[in-house]
Image (cartoon, rainbow, N blue to C red; front, side, top):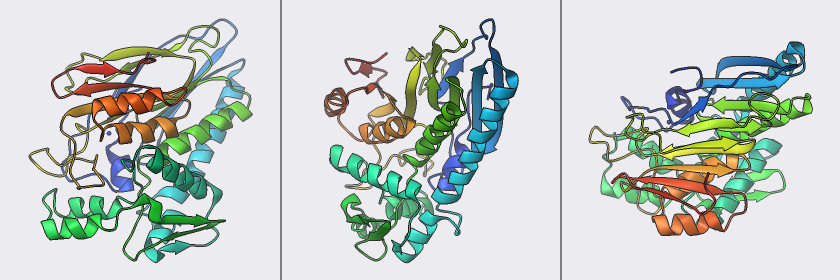
Length: 337
């Protein structure tokens, strides 16, 4: 999905997780506005290439040593979990599940994400579906122009309720099914990195994982909130919103980010009912307690009518959303901002 210090390129990450079409144009999604450390606080920042994207961490702590050590532990946690969720590395747990249709003794992280994905599948009326992988793979192979019979066959393998979990065992109900956790895995990993920072004694931090933002505490280590600007889908610098945060997450999903076809009609947001991509909603930004929740909900809301999207968001405590339509209209839930 997204180059200044905090505008992150999501192109390679999406390719790693398998939803990037050749030649796709990728736009920045979120910009984090800078702040300076308050007296007595040391600001430490580091950026690494992980998950195929730039992951940045900024922490404010009483000492630089504390900040550096906490960041090191958080990056180590990210690296560990990358080895679980990539579906293009044959050694990962997710790849094993997709290859064999069953996985015994699945790692807890994979079980957590599959469980969350199943709950989100139900809550969104099937809009969010982790088993969309056969359709995504078909769109990639055909550059967004699949044969109707092939699309029908792929859609028959899409049903999030048919990815079963029993204890530490995961299995698909039908041969040929496969999962992609693109919509939530990176968010889950970013949340885990945030937990690691807190356990290391850091309460003032910002994690920017390729445009998915998780914050805690203050931007100056004292009182100043983190300020985040939501990117204009038309890339004209006309930010739809600038929000202030001291906790939680924000993520943006948009059909303007990754395309499978030259006409830019087939993009990475795929309707699990018909394999098509929405054209009216250009971007959805979601604030939520965690990046996992923000990422997953933003994907699902992109596939809904605006009224349905607002109704669902307002029913979820601690969640809010901003929709930008193809006409330029900006529609927000009652608690956005």
